[in-house]
Length: 393
Ligand code: FE
Image (cartoon, rainbow, N blue to C red; front, side, top):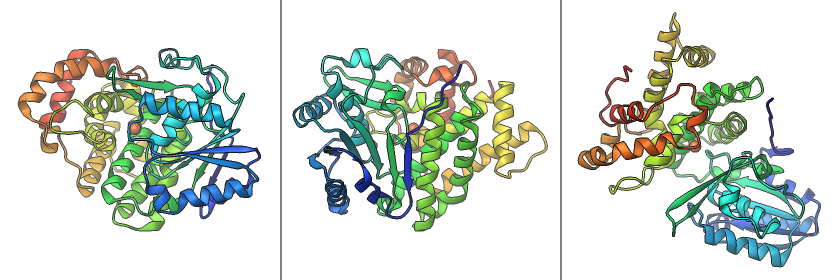
C-alpha cells in the first residue's frame, strides 16, 4: 500500500504572497530567520496580509542556519503562550524546518525528539494550528515536504524528522522572494533540486504519482538552471517551481545515497563545511554510475536521459550521456568534480573515510537507494569521488 501526500493548497506566481490575506483564523505567528526577509520587505508584507485577514500577529525571528533544539523549544513556548491557529514560516529551509518542529512541541509539549525522530510516528497535528510555508530559497522544498532536520549541538546529533503530519497545509511559492539569491546559492540549491528529482525517480519507493513530478523537475532544471545562475529572472522563477516539484516527488518517494553521502560529509572535515547542494552535485555522477549496475536503476536512469532528449542507442550509452550532462552542468556552475578539488585534505580524508562510510550506510536515505551497498563499497565510492576515478564495481 502506498501513500501520496502534498499540501492542500499551493499558491505560486507574482504576488502569491498576498494569498495570506485569505487565511481564516484569529492569531498567526510568523517564524523567520535572520534579517533578509525583513530587509527585503517581505516580513512587513506578510504581517500586513495576515492583519488584513483579521488576525492578531506575532513574529518569532532569528532562527539560525541548521536550527537547534533550543530554538525549537523557545519557539514552541512562545506559541503556547500566544496560542496561534496559524503558523506561517517564511525564509530559507532553516526557519521552515524549525517551525515544523515547534508546531509539534506546541501541540504536544510533553513529546521528545527521541520519540519524534522515529519515522512516520508523529501524533496528530492540527489540533491547535495549521501551517503555511513560504520559501525564500530554491532547493530544500521544505514548503511541500514531510521532513525537517533539527540539530542538538550539545549531544552533537541531528534529528531527521519525517512524517506527513508536518507536510504544510499551504505552500506559497512566490518568485519575488528568490530574485536576490547569490549565484553560488542558485547553483548549489539548483543541483540539490536536480538530485532530489533524480534520486526520487530511481528510488525503490518511486510510483506513478511521483514519476511525473520528478521528470518535469529534471527537465526544468536542465532548461533553466544555467540562465538562473547568470541572473535571468524568468529562469529563476521556473527554478523556484522546479525545486518545488522535485520536493513533491521526494517527499513521497524518498531519496538515495547521494544524500546519505552529503549528509555525513557536510561537516566532517576540518577544511570547512561542504554546502549540501555542492556535495550532492559532486557525488551525483558517481552514484549514478554505481547504481546503474542494478538493471532496474539502469533502466530508469536511461528513461530520464531519453525524456530530456539526450542521445545514445543503448541504455548504457544513455546513462553515460546523462552523467556527461551533469558533469557539463557542474563545470558551467563552477562546482568542483572531486572532493580533492573542493579542497579536502588527503591525509584527513584517508583517516576519516572508513568511519564516514559506515555513517553514510546508516543514513535514513540509504534504505530507498535502488542498489544495496556495503560499507566497503561505500568507502570505495567515496575514494572515487575524492580522486575522480572510474566507478567500476
Ligand atoms: Fe537535498
